[in-house]
Structures are given as structure tokens and as C-alpha cells.
Length: 90
Image (cartoon, rainbow, N blue to C red):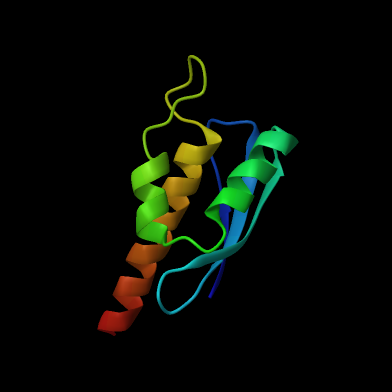
């Protein structure tokens, strides 16, 4: 399933990604932000599980900000997993 998620409190504006039935992340792209760093994060995320990425990225701060693009990506992944769990209950 494909997800487009707006992010808050960071330079990027959106993160998009796909999650397969095993919660494996592919096709990660960020809109806006530090292009080189975000390309690196996207490449490192490719083929990893959403749960692993949440564990790795959640809580990362950017300078004085209470969040970061990686932290926002972790939040987007968590939201996608929660949405998927709710849909499975229906």
C-alpha cells in the first residue's frame, strides 16, 4: 500500500513510501528538506521493516528542534502501521 504523509516541524514537507504485506518499506521519497541527507535515509530504509526503521529513527532531533526528518518518517511509519491494524479489524 502507498502512503503520502505530511510532516511537521522540519524542512521537508512530505514523505512517501510503500509498505508491503510484511511491513517492508520501499520507494521512500521526501519532498523538500536536505536533499542529500534525505536521499541517504531513503536508500538506507529500502527493504527494511517498518518496525526496525521506527526503532532506529524515532527520537532523532535536528539541532534545537524537538524532531527531525528521520523522526517524522518514523511517525509516518507508525501511523501507517496503526492504520493498517485498524483496517484489519474491520
